Image 1 (cartoon, rainbow, N blue to C red):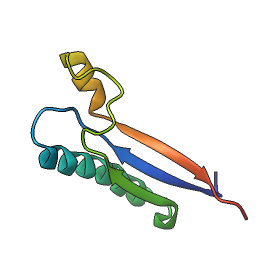
Image 2: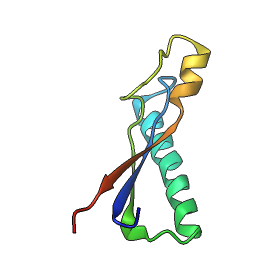
Image 3: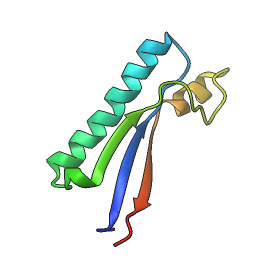
Length: 81
């Protein structure tokens, strides 16, 4: 997809403070962003954002759910030419 922008989205579980979860989700997304840059993906096609614990996909009531909520997701947006 040479005509796409990729947003790397970092997420966390709900353990810890809002501030700590926001920071770790941003660091998680930035680590993936840095990997793409190191592997020669054009940085103009990338952006990253941490969402902290605000967008859980799984229940935070179980360890399994919390483990799954500590994740990276990719949002790919095609840019019109």
